[in-house]
Length: 326
Ligand SMILES: NC(=O)c1ccc[n+]([C@@H]2O[C@H](COP(=O)([O-])OP(=O)(O)OC[C@H]3O[C@@H](n4cnc5c(N)ncnc54)[C@H](OP(=O)(O)O)[C@@H]3O)[C@@H](O)[C@H]2O)c1
Image (cartoon, rainbow, N blue to C red; front, side):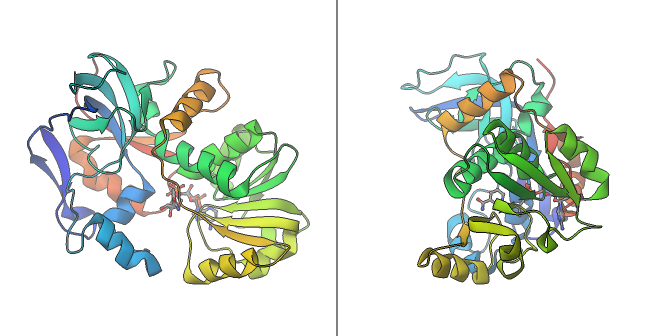
């Protein structure tokens, strides 16, 4: 089968399209014939291995010290079940599914644990639209529910409201009953409003840390904000939750956890919960949330797709089309 491989860390040009062996599903796995995948901010980080900061060593131990352990890139997938393992009973050959698994999704076939983040594709989405759901939606859900601990009526500010995590964070925060302020550039203000944000702050014109808004939580999906500035606009027990963390924020998280009052929270999303993916699928099917598909590239254009995601300017997600439509 054809797959995108990354055999050393570096710029987009390290990526190659290679003929590799098709995976065989283990007993508890299913084999997905991938129709669409994506390039996420996580994929370009793992390829380039920049911005890992203090997590450099643990991340290298996890993903490969000198080169990636799993050379096949990609984590979001949409496709049809091509084969099932001996003990796998949840899906049948021909079922159309979507999901997330770290590594291996930018390929014609992918073996996935059936108990992992894999679920029937929402009917109302095409392959490419469904391919840009899991990473952003699962991250946004985990961060809002588990780290923000969002409650109806709260005032939440989403910094980076137009990225893959941000577009779902805005919609999910509205779904959870919060009053949402989205921070984005002028070009994305209309998009963020269309996603349901009650208020939009254009970061090129206004610094939200100078007020006048007061927030129960700030969810920062891009970095570049600091607790020393944001605490002025946090409510007395407000939380500043960082999706992208530095050592300073880790120490602030430790320090503020030992005190009463405003807190810094740093978190990680696993992105591997089937229950969460089913929740997201349900919200899509009832029209409560929707993906934002910025661009679609073909598999042979994977280097261009990585170059684009490297700009840090994509809106929502970037899909990769693989194989012909069924
Ligand atoms: N900790 C975890 O478990 C976890 C989970 C998921 C993601 N992440 C990380 O979270 C980060 C965000 O992920 P993502 O996929 O959402 O990124 P993304 O899709 O690449 O974000 C791109 C967006 O960021 C916006 N942006 C850039 N600079 C900005 C600024 N100064 N203020 C406001 N918005 C700005 C851009 O909008 P403009 O063009 O309008 O500026 C663009 O729409 C990544 O670093 C990713 O690795 C961490």
